[in-house]
Amino acid sequence: MPAQQRRKFIQTILTGSVLAGTAPIAWAADHRSQLHSFATGNRFKISLNAYSFNAPLMAKKTTLDDVMDFCAREGFDAIDITGYYFPGYPEVPSDAYIYHLKNKAHRLGLGISGTGVRNEFADPDAAKRAADVLLVKNWIDVAAKLGAPVIRIFAGKNLPAGYQWEEVAGWVTAAINSCVAYGKQKGVIVALQNHNDFVKTAAQTIDLLQRVNSEWFGLVLDTGSFVTEEPYGEIEKTTSYAVNWQIKEKLNYKGTVSDMDLDRLCRIIQASAYRGYLPIETLSPGDPFLLVPPFLQKVKTALAKAMANA
Image (tube, rainbow, N blue to C red; front, side, top):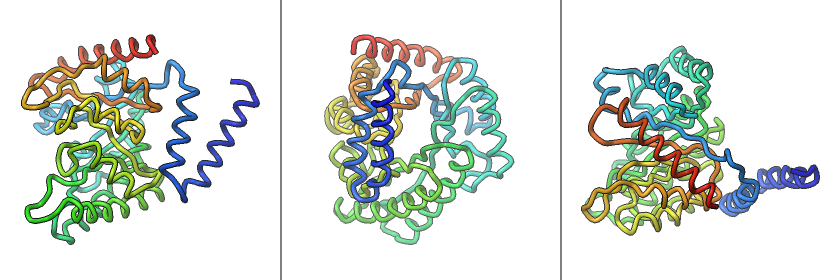
């Protein structure tokens, strides 16, 4: 990049940082547009979402250390270490354990692309929502110590009976706002995962993102959970809000389970302004040590094809 162009790019970032408090969504759009224009062949890094190993991890048949060794062996760039698999979850782990994983990741050459928790912000009980706000904040501290840039949260399991979506969205927004303010203090982006729960469509997802309207809040774009309307179109509508992804192997739409069209998905990702980690997740029954490697190769192949044809 020529020196003059590079200086202009840096000035754009610095100016954007100053203005972010007044119009973060607009700033984010401009910033992503700038980044897209400087995209290079290595703009994506493939991560593993540890949920791929949910069954053996929950059954104590494997450990996070084992999964990290697997990631390094198979050529992943990073790992998303979901909070559920830390000892004592939902209580926070010891600093010694957090720093052990951080040290191990570095020595293996792995980035830590994120972490995540289970929370419920659509519960009519305000005390329960407050407890889950505290849960998220506690795990924001864990994310900061890990060096994870993003913590994944949910809106809520469903729309409670007897309530309107708009009213419940107000509760969810207030809870998320509190978490995002704390995430900003700790340097951790809070990211909503669309999960076919309280949030089912691109429109609902964007609604919540715009209500919070902060550069410290974004979307974990779950490619397998937009199933109310045509999924690839829904994914395309929300790519500009993504701060992380979940690339899933299966898509369940209108009662039919099919393989994700990775070629189509990777064309959408490549055409977006997104840069960074693309965590993958396999949910099929069977041994993830055997299921994950071929899916990783399929994602790499589809992504390389999309980049070559851009």
